[in-house]
Length: 62
Image 1: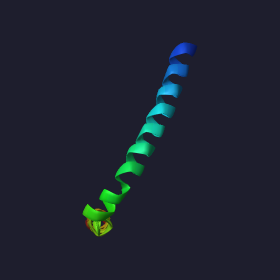
Image 2 (image 1 turned 180 degrees about the vertical axis):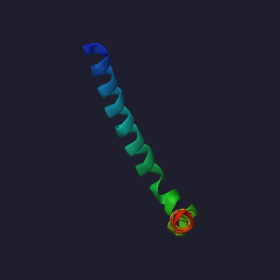
Image 3 (image 1 turned 60 degrees about the vertical axis):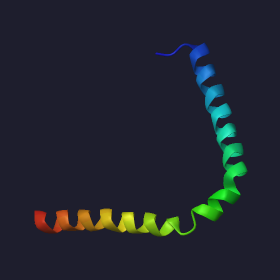
């Protein structure tokens, strides 16, 4: 399906991408703490909303 060269390139690209993302996040970590305080509450609310939709679907399906 893929040649050996393509697989090696894909693997090296993935490793370089992860390293670049790590350093970018590390650089911006202080800004994230300053501007995105409490964003976990939005995530929890979203997950609860999705769970509620599934519960309603199961309840009305029976």
